Length: 230
Image (tube, rainbow, N blue to C red):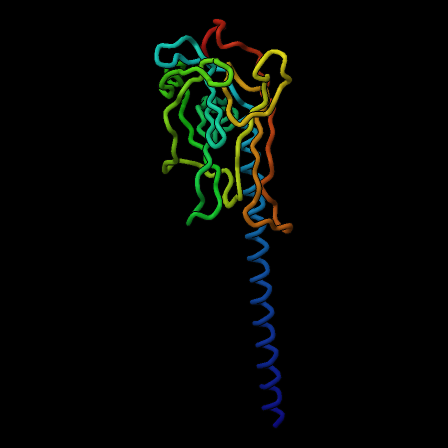
């Protein structure tokens, strides 16, 4: 009888230990996954900020047109040259960046992705431009670019978002108007600041969430003046 009681107690103790270990491992795995998700969001957001802060005032010849400041600014697409690269950071070769907002997996929300094209000179930038047409509001020439899209090498900067949109800060449509934020950059040159507005698809206070990123553009250069090419 005593042996049976001892065996029963040992079995109950072993079962309790196994359950406790399983619960502990599950909690550890969930905590680790949440920590990695938070690090991924923070890291991607830092990359986006550095890409915008590294904007280079490069010029390009667009389909025979005069020199233009290489920049494409639309609500869901943006092209720019940056000194920051994904692989080598600030020490790498300059890149032409294609940032775009595309639908998320299975049509849930949207995601922000970026393509990198090594920048080798004005011809590289000019190859992405197709021509110019006057802007209906300002009358200034607006340069058209080739369509952009994701590829196997695209890097996902943010995912599972309710929305993601680009805004550009610059002078008003006339000399008397104050500076404004606009969804479409008509130039000339480069904006004074760039804002990337983001919101999570499923807000969760226990996790780090994508937030709006705003970066000033510290460029003191006119595309129409010959400074020497990069």
